[in-house]
Length: 75
Image 1 (cartoon, rainbow, N blue to C red):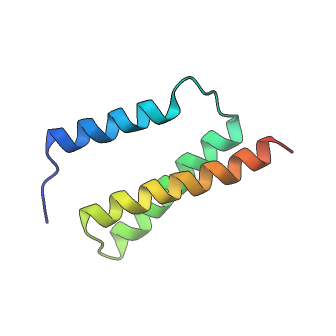
Image 2 (tube, one colour; image 1 turned 90 degrees about the vertical axis):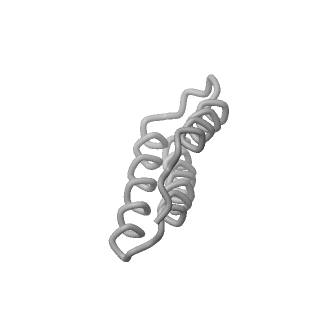
């Protein structure tokens, strides 16, 4: 298993900060992103995924949960 180095963590953090910008997502979008990201990462970690697959699953889950929550906010 590879160790995460500080450079990768900083790049990921900067990417997230730039992607969010000044947008103010609704409460359901925020909740959906958190639940989707945590759920996907948790399940992937439980089935024995590598660090990169856990991070990928967290990103995909957060996006999917955010999109779903945003659709709920717009109703």
